[in-house]
Image (cartoon, rainbow, N blue to C red):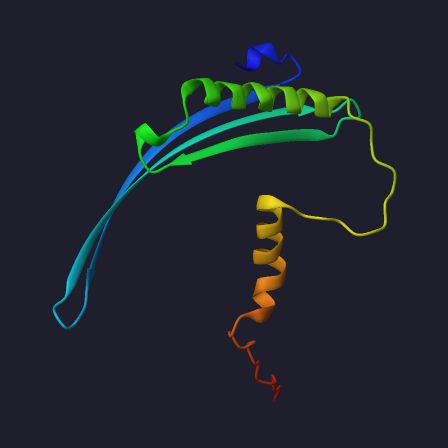
Length: 135
């Protein structure tokens, strides 16, 4: 698929399947066994911009069962689109300096919230350090 995008310098496609069995047992004698299965497909592509800046991008698909993966046609289209995006980034013009608000959407909004905002609302107390006394 990446041969159709000559601007891509390196690429990879990985597929993985994980099956996990978790056993819960408590002191009251109750127990629970839970099995979970996860299929992941990750395609990544990298290149270098005309000014030498390294560029990379990826696409990631997750399913609970092999049968619930998107159709092969959709997966191939996603990989083709990845190659086109990375190739287009090589020659994209640089943005002028910008100072102003930024709107985050989708996964980016969730990541910003989880990494920047949410830790400030957690109930974990900050560590208190004892003063160091030198004798």
